[in-house]
Length: 178
Image: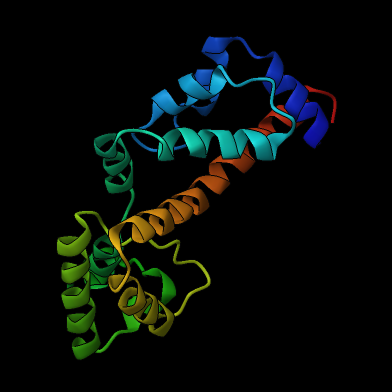
């Protein structure tokens, strides 16, 4: 699949490329516009790396807009709140909907400190994590320097984007005889 998909991507017209990849990263259609100029891509991994490099290499305000467009811990905690669970019947990832009131308050406090320190949401692709693991990561990441934390946040953004990439690649594969 990789080779035929790469050929299809490299053969795309500019408008098709931007329409296909412009929404992979939230608030960053310009990343696809810039990445188009870097074709041909050796493989789909090179495409993903190029798009991420465009986002990470953007001016600070553009980078922050991207980071702020993703659901941070506050969003997960809102879903996990007892009131929200009762009203919507939703569950939160990582067991955040199973927190005691004390744990919930601790998460809220640490998350507020994180937002104040870094001026962005605490981003974590929560799938596969536990509430205790999320708490440990939050405490560790609060001690990072801003540049380190931004790099980690973008790694998480990449994890959020992976399903979108996979959906695009799957869509392109059958079109090319695979």
